Image 1 (cartoon, rainbow, N blue to C red):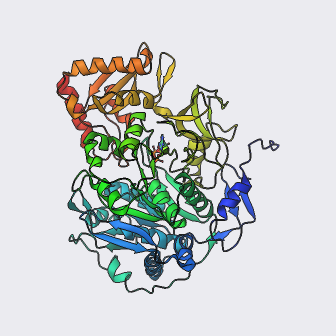
Image 2 (cartoon, protein in one colour; image 1 turned 120 degrees about the vertical axis):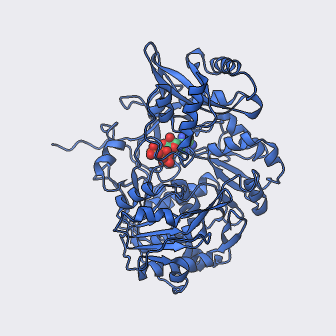
Image 3 (cartoon, rainbow, N blue to C red; image 1 turned 30 degrees about the vertical axis):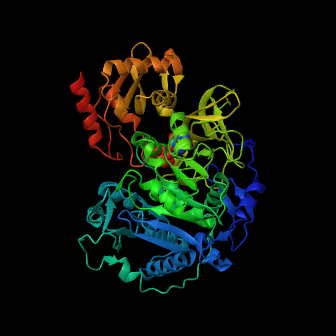
Length: 624
Ligand code: ATP
Ligand code: MG
């Protein structure tokens, strides 16, 4: 085979070298990007750095030891202020504890913890020692934890006795024991005492954090690792199918995490108080609670519990208490706030808010406007950030202070990033047209593979547009008349009605803009005449619940026809009490497709609440 000329566009390497220059490198890189083995790439080859040193020590050395890194707030109301000097001590002690257990660079560590400071100490201690961490969301079942421990081959599990959930202390160690009973590769389980719950104990294997970590030295000299040394493995949320173990490495990831956090939120480490409400078990928690903010010496808020404990104003109370200036959350929570009512945020002083962020799903324009009005005093820019576990950091987002924002549009790739909307054959579509979102140039924080499965990496992301060498994101998108990007939902979810491609996101936004609707999910169900028919599942707002269902349904069908066009008019609208969501709050449309097509519901293991499907099915059986 003769080599083909490389026609792929080159990313702006000087730009990325400048961004990498914000970090401390023990050894400078010799080459910014090496893609000789595409789709496997290497960034900052030859460079060496320590991620934890960059997030912690260098700020202390520069005289910022007294700056608060985290204002932490527990669900029961206990608080801790952790300065950068405190963080350095805790991370060093934790690193020394892990060394005492015989862990060495390259060994994997699984972490299943609630949102407590030890979760951050544990992640940074791993990073400091070159131990790739695999953080598993605290709400995942023993079976989910077990498969992630096995897949990554973890030698250590770090967990807690229990966790607070909606005002109750729930067991955690008892559950992780069900997983570790089947994972002999786990030599030790390190247990943080959080709730005081009684725990089963395996002598010799299990160790208390406060006994092992607290007696360690507070000094530890970090070692620099190769820029491509694995930093972590993180399993995707599992919205579409079996979770993938996404691998991220050190230099490129940290460069882009810091760059995007600084830029997207126009962050000022001297004055901002920043709060990202994600869980540490998701990529948003990794990049925008831990690595990005700490690399930028941010003062953050970290909150352990649920937004409605002990009352529905909890988040607003926290914003007021700490003077939060940047608030970053997900559309699912914004829609929940809308359901609870605008009088709740109105009771608090939210005037400190300067920038609002959104991530995880397309944000409905209605939710966008509500967010800006009721949290942002009608002024604060809302940055809708599109990215994935695989991209490691934000890729598409409007910048605060940039061109006027458009509610519901992520708008433009960030400086340094290139994204395109293309058709089936990889040709860029025109303004006003829709197609597939691709990333046509490599970026520093891109995934370096699927853990232990190179074929799945090639197949999932690189086979669709292999000819062009584009990364296939799996999301549909559209250019508007200005060339701005609108995300339309997963490619698998986009509907095809009589040959028209209709976006689930667009129909859902139309439904949510009707005053009777609190939340909506739309799927395409196979239909003998039109190919697919639009089927909508809606949750009604309190006030509309009394109206006869027939009346609401016909009003909503007309509303969608008016907002988008008769072609998008739902064939069926089903009023439901709940929607099936993943544990990160995303709607799982494939399960609703099963309902719409009268099938057994498929795999529900990544669902936040498995009983929701029973509730929906029972309600529908009763109605017909
Ligand atoms: P899995 O890949 O296992 O199905 P997942 O895709 O839900 O799970 P994540 O990596 O957490 O896991 O989510 C990334 C996806 O979330 C994107 O591909 C996109 O579909 C959606 N998404 C995230 N942010 C936005 C946004 N601002 N606008 C629209 N969609 C978004
Ligand atoms: Mg995905």
